[in-house]
Image 1: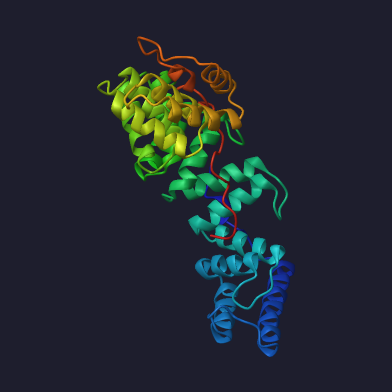
Image 2: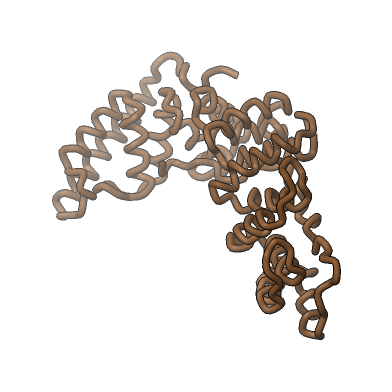
Length: 323
């Protein structure tokens, strides 16, 4: 792929006229707001006029900033999706990586523009190749799934790794899953555990749950039930139903924590409220007087599904103009 819309070809008089009219209207918007005494968000009318002038002159940073103001309706300009899209696209065509990432998201969502996955993938790649971490993750996911671009899992792993090395938790989680399952990268539990740990430390809930499972099983790390319980609780507190269920099992059987049937029932109850069937059944058993096992079973730890979601998706948004 090329460099996106950076090569815009010959000037189009109609397009230039439309852009000039847009800028004039933007200035009029600022003047109208000023006359009405509206809040300009501390930016000042003179600053807004200068920003519009710079954007009209082709400055990508100013175009991106102006797009954000129009998208949010802040800083003394009205909320206007059409103008926001206009300016973010110009910024993207001017090579601004955040604008390219944002415009890619609009192409995928169809928000303010015609939905176009191929164009979206191209813009993600343009931003990714300039080092934009979230774009690297998104483009890696697209390559892995073959969405909007020809499937290439080896290249997908490269982009995911670039994003993961820039601490994008979703990319770290995806790499961990690939290494756990041995998909396209070779099975490597130590590498999987390291990527899961890095994502878990960023409070990524699913990574916390998987890392807990790895500590419980001794996969890629030294087996440690206390650490398994610690990470399982972190995932449970972050709302992962499987982790709630498994944490209930830890407390019920005293795995890595002191046995506490009442605490177990609370976690089983939370998982049950989230629709977890096994937790619902376990809660009923406790209410009927079930006792902990003499030898503590893993209580469904394997049910976390370490290999889940390996086909992924964008998993974290598609950008937008408000960044």
